[in-house]
Length: 221
Image (cartoon, rainbow, N blue to C red; front, side, top):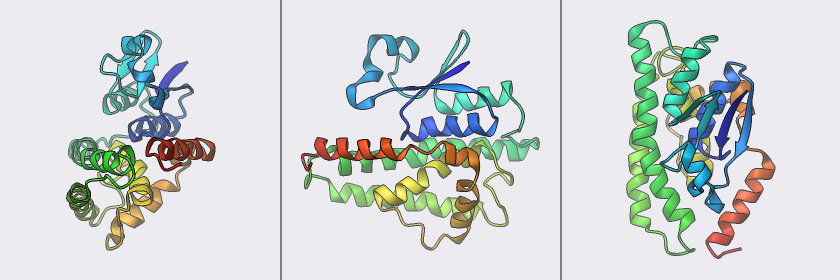
């Protein structure tokens, strides 16, 4: 059986979980505790020398990098397809997947560091505003891409999943506003109603523990 080494709140892990659930691929989840430095442990570094999640193990095959993992799953388990047959749409799906990794997660990660990793009251508010503006720019791109389409590549694909798993979290935890983006809101509603998406959500118990840990780290518990 496939093993997925994951931290449930990681959007990169959730990207992979959504694909596994969409394709009904049985897998075993292995929790990687980022707060305890599990990705820096010697045994974990044998799986991913860069010390990040997720890692997928399929028999003798060990893969890291969520985008590559999902491409592997798409090729090995082609049904239901998560890349369009049309080469232009297929390229569009891959392009949007890369856009999530390259243009959305960078600014969001910077905001996370300021809001949650620094002691209360020490966040760089100017930096938060600057990176929030970058995220707003990404939202404008997505809104334009969705003109006349239900999904970013015309049909539900790998290109939708990254943005879909993280936008609700960006809204609830980081204050990102989706007001003024009606196509994006409708698109998100379509995807979040999918069973695979809902199965990929972190449990309420995990989220409670996560919030308590973050509060302690910031010295405000």
